[in-house]
Amino acid sequence: MSPSLIRATLNCTGVQPNLLYSAGLTALHHLVLSAQSAHTRSLVAAIMRSLINASAAVDSLSGLGRDGLTPLQLAASLPNIMLMELLLQFKASLQMTNSANSTAVEIAGQRGHSRA
Image 1 (cartoon, rainbow, N blue to C red):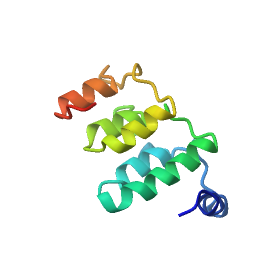
Image 2: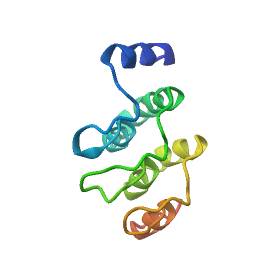
Image 3: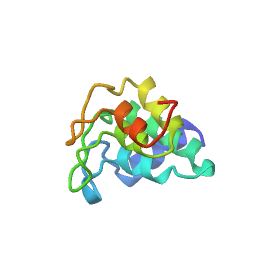
Image 4: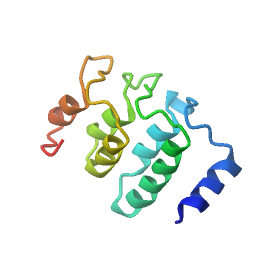
C-alpha cells in the first residue's frame, strides 16, 4: 500500500494520532497489538510510519489497565522485533519506564526476547 493511500485513508477516517481510544490506547498502541502475524506486520509498519509522520507521539503512555506502556514497551512485551526497530528508528525512548519502573529493554528481557 502506498504512503499517499495510507495518509488519505487515515485522513478520511479521522484518526487522531495521539487520542486515547478504547482501553486507553493510542492508534500506535492498537497497531502494535494488531501486528501479531507476519502477514500484517509490513502493512502495520507502513501505517505506523504514516501516523508518526503525522505527529503521533512515539513515547505516548497508555492508560486504563495497561501499566502505562509506550508503544515500544508494548512491542517489547510481544514477539515483535520489527516494530521495535521501527519505533527506535523514529527515536522512541529506551529510557522511559512503565508504572512498574521497567524500560523496553527490561521488558523484552523479562519476556525472553534476546535481540532487544
